[in-house]
Image (cartoon, rainbow, N blue to C red; front, side):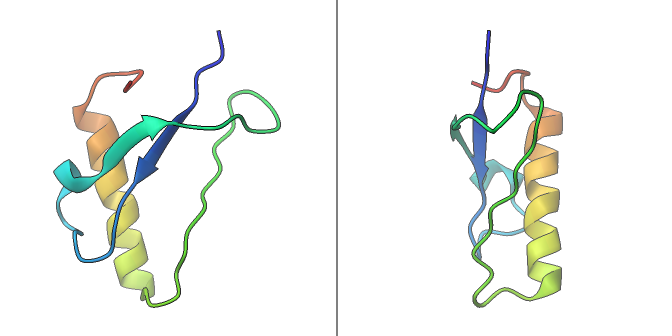
Length: 67
């Protein structure tokens, strides 16, 4: 069965994996694929990487599949 998930981290809520939201995702072009979509209009590279770390921490601490 196909399973998709979307993780959302917001600027200003970095360094807090609990603030990462988890929701149903959309299908990718193929199975077992990760797509990263980001609006980095005002993000520094450091902020962006911190937000990715928050998503990683949320995945590590949660159930799998997460929803």
